[in-house]
Length: 202
Length: 252
Image (tube, rainbow over all chains, first blue to last red; front, top):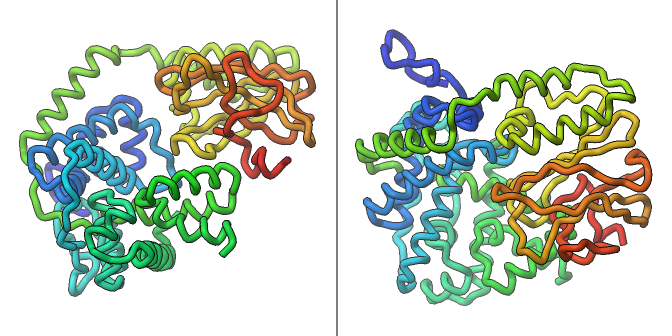
C-alpha cells in the first residue's frame, strides 16, 4: 500500500493498489497500472540489470524489455509462486544473463556487494521503494544473506549475478568443484530456512 | 549416497540454474517423475526469486526510460489491441457461470465455452483469474499442473455435471515441431484411453473437446504427453501436464 499519507496531490487510485491487482489490470491492457508498477519497481529492475551486465545503456535496454514483457505477459503471472517483485526480478536476471552470454566474455571475478542490512530500524525506506512492505521484505533478505559466510556469499553472487556454473565458479575461485558445490548448497539451504522462518516463502 | 539424496543435494543449485549440463539434465529428468523433489524445488525457487531483493539500489533510473516505455506500449495498443467489445463476451460467458445447466444443455454449454475460449485467450485468462471463479455451476473443473515445461504452463479440464462431456484448455505449452502433438490421456486404474490429440498456437494455448470412450467420471487421473503427430496407443513421450498428485512413472 502507498506509504505516503497526507495531502499529497500525486496520490492516485493506482498508487493505493497492491502489486497483484496492478498485474491483473495490466493483463487487461491498463497502461496506468503498468505505469504504477514501473514507478514502484523500475529502480530494482534497473539496478539488478546493472549489477549483472555492468553497463548503463544495456541495463536501460533490459529495463525497457522487462516492462515491455510485463505488458504482454502479465497474464502469465501466477499468484502463489512468488510475489510480483520477485517475478520481475527473475525476468530481469534471466534477460540480463542472456545478454551476458551473448557477449561471450571470458570468466571474470566479481566483487561481492550484496546490500548490507540497515543498521537500525528495518523499516527504513532507503531507496525508491514506495511501500514500507517492500522495504521490509528487502531488509529481511539482506539480513539473511548477511548471515552467510563470506565464501558462501561469494559463490552465491557468482552463480546469481553472472549465471556461472559450478565448474566455472570453481575455475574463477581456484577452488575444488566439490567445495563450490557445497558452498552453494549450504548457502541456499540456510537462506531457505531463514526466509521460510520469516514466512516469506509461500 | 542414494540417487534421490544426490538429486536433493543438487536442487538448490538447480534453482539457481548453475548446475553443469550433465547434472542439469539428470535433475530435470528426475523431476518429471518425482513430486517430492518438485515440492522441494519449489522452496529453493522461492529463495532464488528473492535474491534480487538483496541487490543495492544505488543508481537512479534514467528519466527518459519511462517515456520510451510509454511510446512502446501506445504503439502496441494501437496495432494489436483495438478497443474491444470483450465486455459483452465476458458478460455472456459469465452468465453461464451462474446458470444451472440441465443435462440437455451440457453439450451446448461446453461447446459455447470451447468457442469462446478458442476465440479469446485474453478473456479465458481473465475468467480464470476473476474473483468469482471460475465457478462453473453444474460442472467440475480439474487443474493440470506442469511437470517439466515452462513454469507457466497449465491446463484445466472442464467436465459436465453428468460426466459425459469434457473440454480441455491449456496455455503456455511449448510449440512442438510438425512431427509432434500433445496427447491427453484418461487414466482408470492402469488402463489409459486417449482423450485428445492437439497442437498449440504461438501462445502455447489451445481449447479442445475431450473424446472419451467411457464416462469421464470413471477416470481417476489425467495427463498430457508429447507424442508423434498421429498420436500413440500408449504414452511414449514425456509428461508435460498432469492432474495433481499423479505421474505416469509412479503409476506403472
